[in-house]
Image: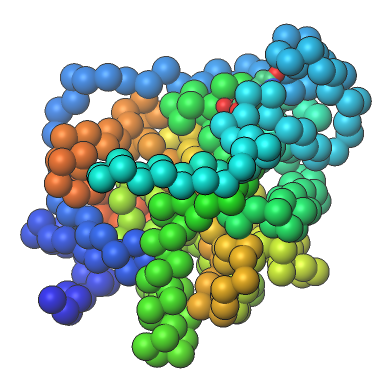
Length: 353
Ligand code: H2U
Ligand code: ZN
């Protein structure tokens, strides 16, 4: 089936339709206008905004004791340590097991925790750009180092209790392993087959098509943040460099500084949307660290925030999503417009003091 020819810039809600995600080879059902239905269900408890610069109970604050008994260094900038409760172990020997339909394989790996800042109360959106540069440099250093041993290095952040973050101290995680996980494997396959057919990069062709579309949220000289045509989560965005880039380790100089600026601006727009710290999961996808050709890869970050209508009403991926396919109630175009309209000046700097 061919892709829809409908005008992507129309302003009236459309009839229910499905959109194709060429990166994951999946479809999403778009049912505009359903966000107006009454809601008597679960509401989130928004995260408290009362965090202190230092919390003696916090296992990530400088010089504090962690659950393992280790003591954090008196760090003054971004720092990283090996997770005390890792999901992967570096000492596992590779093996495969197949018994009819029962297939398994072992994998070696490691898990790291990245403390973005010594300050317990600073979200990424509140950090200064020069300090966000340090975070990106840490993602790069960890990716370069872990990529020497592991095929896939997943940099990610769970932010806010709604996304399972265990602590308000600004932090992210890195899991690295010898296997290529399911979702990156799918993106590897789709980008490779696109590149083999056309000789161009799927995501860069997509950026050309989206140039000045109503789904673009932020565009600077080096980066574009947009709500993808095929976005699943209500305010999902993707952040893509405008020139061919396979991995985060290739982002240097002014592109690195401008990445920090875009990350800060995007997260500020999220926080401003409901004038509340906006929960999200985010992470980076780039070429796997193996010997296979990787020129079909374009680096990108996904931001998956769960909130739908307010700081307390989230999107649940439940019945239809679990049993049929992903579904969204809010047009990606409307989501992008609402993000663009949220001021780039953080709401706390406007309403506090
Ligand atoms: P999340 O907030 O995304 O859960 O990340 C925090 C991680 O920090 C989590 O994976 C680890 C947890 O295992 N952790 C430690 O490594 N040491 C500790 O003392 C507590 C938490
Ligand atoms: Zn802390």
